[in-house]
Amino acid sequence: MAQQAREERTVLESITTLGEAGKKAPKMEGLPTGIDGLDQLFFTTSIQRKKVVRKSLGGLPRYSVFNITGVSDTGKSLMVEQFSAFQASQDRRVAFVTVETPAEFVAVALKERAKAMALDEKKADENIVIIDAASHRVLREDYLALLDTLAHVIRNYKTEAVVIDSITGLYENREMQARTIVRPFYNFLKKWHQTALMVAQKRSSHEEFSPEAAGGYAVSHMVDGTMVLFKQTIDSTYKERMYGLPLGEMIRLFRIDGCRMCGHDTSTHLLEITDLGLVKIGPTLLELKNQGR
Ligand SMILES: Nc1ncnc2c1ncn2[C@@H]1O[C@H](COP(=O)(O)OP(=O)(O)OP(=O)(O)O)[C@@H](O)[C@H]1O
Ligand SMILES: [Mg+2]
Image (cartoon, rainbow, N blue to C red; front, side, top):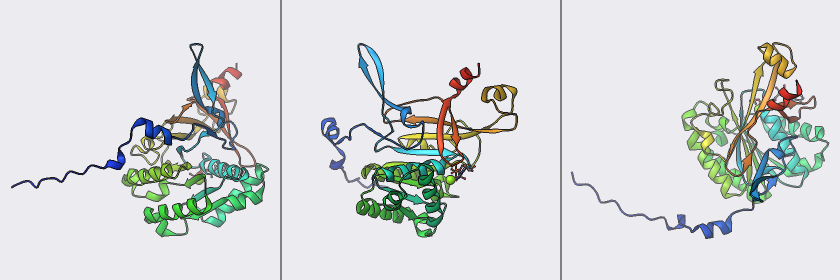
């Protein structure tokens, strides 16, 4: 059978010199998150007198798209709510896509976070724009409709940040599609120069210390970085001594698992949720061990 000749198709728009692309590159700077202990974990480096010197970014790298992953009850939602309330208090608009919880309930949580952080609630009211995908099935089932809605919000409200809680809710029971959904969202958020946090729920506690099970299927390769939240049970006298907690208790831990945009701390930290429902990143396990000595 004769093979049909393939028509040549060169995509000229995709070609650019490094110099041209460099001119469009945004400046590397930090976006403070409002989450205690997190901002100093990102840094850039320079060489001074032949020595590598770290300079803290003082926030999440601006225009980065991060995955926040962990099993249930690890503090993911609290963290993104806190981030949103803080951005709003700084007069930065946030698009908050809620996939799990209807808008009115997310509103209560966001107001609680603002109150707990002693922020101006009025600014939260004005600067957080909620897209309720929990109540509108079409947005969960047709991700292009969600991207169009998000583009409308970004354009009309001039948002600087986007939160999606959760991205995994967009491919529930269709985990094989994780990559086909996460990729367009990532490209979209980069194109619109948004700093974004996407919550990825992890279904099992397998591979606790890795983000692999989070929406699985190599989703972590597609984003700029991943923050992993996990829980550990005090099940040995070693852990009892290390954490100063009795057997059977539970502790929450946190780690940044890769960031393409800048340097970052790689240690495992204690994650605390205060009585007011605020997430705090605490000392590293090594610091904790040394304190216990
Ligand atoms: N207002 C609050 N005050 C004190 N603790 C709270 C408050 N809100 C939540 N918590 C605690 O923080 C935990 C983590 O809550 P969060 O909703 O952030 O979990 P999550 O990681 O988003 O879980 P899921 O995957 O089920 O959505 C709760 O289970 C609860 O123990
Ligand atoms: Mg949640």
